[in-house]
Amino acid sequence: MGTYRDDSQCISNGENADASDSRQGDIVYRDKRLHMEYTLEEGQRRIRCKFDNFYQGKTFRCDITLVQPKMDTMVIATPWKEKKTAFYYNQKINCMPAKGKMEYDGKIYRFDPSTDFGTLDWGRGVWTYDNRWYWGSGNQMIDGKPFGFNIGYGFGDTTAASENMLFYDGKCHKLDDVTFHIPDGDYMKSWKFTSSDGRFEMNFEPVLDRAARTNALIIESDQHQVFGRMNGKAVLDDGTVIEVKDMMCFAEDVHNRY
Image 1 (cartoon, one colour):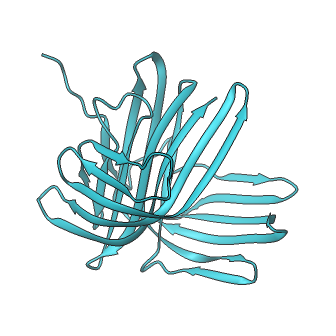
Image 2 (cartoon, rainbow, N blue to C red):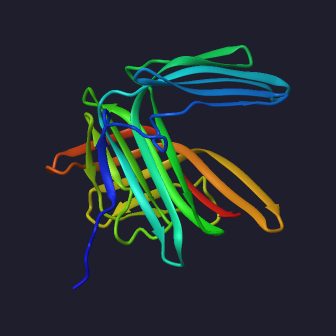
């Protein structure tokens, strides 16, 4: 008999951090057009950006704070079958209440922490040259409680464990395998998501395909990060059915060679 070990875990905020932990370290980037800061403050993460000539000669600015209450998060260590030294250590933090604003073209867009959320995707590792992955995430208030999901596969060997999880009222609920059903040749047509345990069954109506493609001989990237509205059902560990209605979220199909 083989041994099964699930390396995907829920962890709670408040544990001791070390230098390789997502709860430490600030990032600042600056060039002639762009100044961006990502800083950690007490119980929250702040994102500040000024991007000159962002689009059509106009400047983009934002100052957004993501609050991180005590809640479960997703952490996974993923290996590669074809390369024993390759790995990816990843943490996803859903349902982070967002407050602040962004400005573009004379308009100000404000974030309300009672209805608006952000997600942190933090990772480090050494991986292989050619990878294609599928990832999706979203957050929404449902019945007065924060609900979120994280789904994905394709990046590394996930036969022993996956990153598929639901989050509701600060607690995580583990899902089995999830499949992205993407229409051939057109990312803007309706998608479907199904799960092997029947606990994540969704329809997805795309609104925007943030597509980017780079091909420079040995370096190639083909990205489709699609934003849209999701409708369907999610089932918690205790059998409670969560009805998802018009959740604004994203799902992506990315192929990188670098």
